[in-house]
Length: 339
Image 1 (spheres, helix red, strand yellow):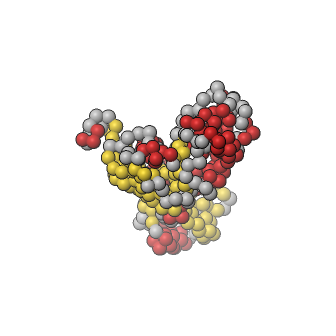
Image 2 (cartoon, rainbow, N blue to C red):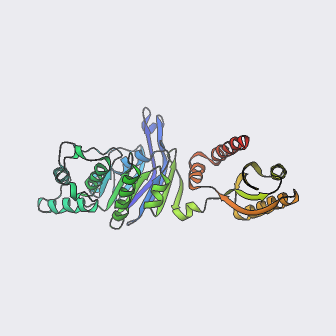
Image 3 (cartoon, rainbow, N blue to C red):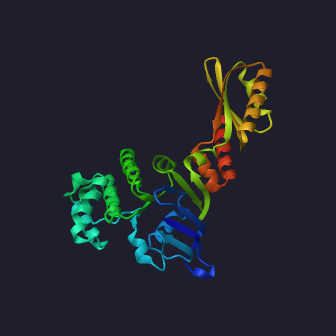
């Protein structure tokens, strides 16, 4: 459905000559028919620029983009006919009623007059705005306005939906409602969903593309991304002399920091490894930690591995592992000083 090959976009002076600000850097990926794909990255990563190029709103510096077999430059009209695009800031007409606006948009998108009413009704039903069909758009809540934007993207029944930050600015209840709508749309449409929120992708998408500084840094399912969650540390609940246990753990190679909390006779010790490690190394390191605490004369009541969160994985992919680890070490050292 979508094929992007060596896409480059520069802004400002220089253009194709190599000058200007580089927003998208040799980006390549494909989206198959029927997939719901999350397009993930931090602010400024090049997500919106890429989507605007895909939707035909922005020219590329070089590279190639095809949508449903149509080149976005050589057959722009044919490609755009197959796309429903929802930008981050939906440009609605606040003085129009919902059904009037969607009928107007269907006409602009060349939906045949005989089919227009049915297409508008179907789009409203899919995004659950039928109950506000005759309400002036300016009187709607932010959540309903986002749904109207989704209906606009759907009204010509395109096979491909490109959604740029569809839940931006919504409250938690509105976000949940829009997610449900997007999940339903994925049953009939190919969806490319841009966001920088991991939970958004987890809730809606079967596959993830992660970009940083205009480059693709990861491509896979949520399960594959989750498997990148390497062990970042361990928690030991011990009884005995707290300072002896902490000293024994801090003396181990590969331990970056040790923090503690005390409840009654038990001490909960959190170890942070100097670097994220795989499962086999985690087991060895945890065994060494338990042995060290026992040799210090303490009893071990509980041992729990601690894995990097998906947010930490995202940070490692988009900022570099060193940045993510430094932030975690600094926060743990601050907690250690306060304990």
